[in-house]
Picture 1 (tube, rainbow, N blue to C red):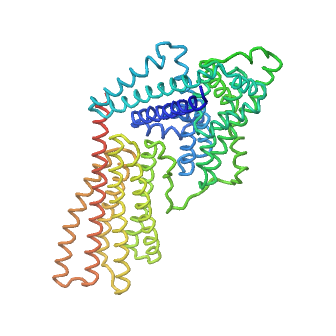
Picture 2: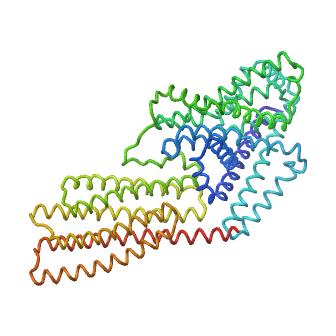
Picture 3: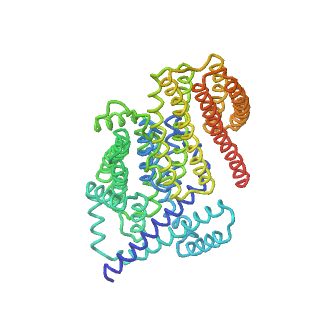
Length: 558
């Protein structure tokens, strides 16, 4: 048999293996989408929680590289500091071992033999996908199909390399890798860096082991090298990111290099001095899974107390004195790397919309204060912040469109649609804030002013308008509809006040009891305040509707 007859089906099997992992991971992600918000909140907890989070997320998305890229994005977006990211990176190394156990299950669970289970699993998954009506069931079918395709890939790779068991060249190659730790580590790192997936790289090693080609000592060194090779994805992803984000990528690399150095030295001592005989024995797929898991858990336990030192070293390599501070006008929580995990991207977008909401709140406070005290120094602040609001609205909209183009479930699709509506209302509130200070500018130009009674009336309406918006923002921020209903009540009061004050002022104008020019500005101010409360009501209504959808979704899952 020629090498072409081996390589072509092997590469095809590898492609199916990786594709199956992706399908399964995507189904798991979408099925767990409603829990991603709680996972994101866990980022603020202690280091141990970060390790657990990294393990769980990586087990779901089946790739430590993807998790680390996501961590780089989180750090770049200000969602996570370096201490938190270090913990998640440690957990990611543990979570990535799940795929290896799936592959090795063909040894310790004979009924999971690819030739037997793969066709059945794919058939069951396809039938469920065709007949499923609920989105949750469709996600489950994706997980099942991905699982089946993954096993078909394993079988193709195993069949392709089976003839190599008689190849003296390949046997000599692995003996050489076992006798030369550095070559073994470099081989593992190189293959993993090329395919950019440690899970797939371990799968290849297990396939070769199943054909009786890999001695234990070679496997140990290759596995350690695979942990270094998987860092290439995050390192590439950090190009163009902030210094802190680059630190996160360097922390991943340093963590794996330090772990590899320590356990390579221990392995060399063991295989060369203590028990040379065991190193030349052939390794099984299950033993590879055990070594892979033990190595990553042991490295995490060993380096966990020294995680702060790794952070300091990464900072020195990147010349970071302190963590980056972003300008108010920048998109703080949004990073394209996070799009790799759409459920987290949705929650990142929620945080950025809330941040935009608080900037709008600042502008509302400044604009209304300027309307009452006519402090011209604040006028430029309102105009400048309005530019920031417009830029944020545009940037968030673009990011939400990108999320639409990822694989998100129906619930997340609804959230993204709602966020688009919310930022539109927030942007319009910003416009009306600018209109309020433009009234002040006109009053200055015309050298007229409001009467004391007019200012008193405006203050009462301003207080209720601000109350309506602040409660609407709280409803979104805290997912609490009680604030939304407070907005509804405040908005009703603003409407009543607007009608009453407008009618009274028109009556004063008709009876020549006030200046016409200041009277027009007064009416314009009433209009802007009433419109602001209208948009606040729209935001509150979105919060109410989303709460209802979330409850229906929870009931459907139950």
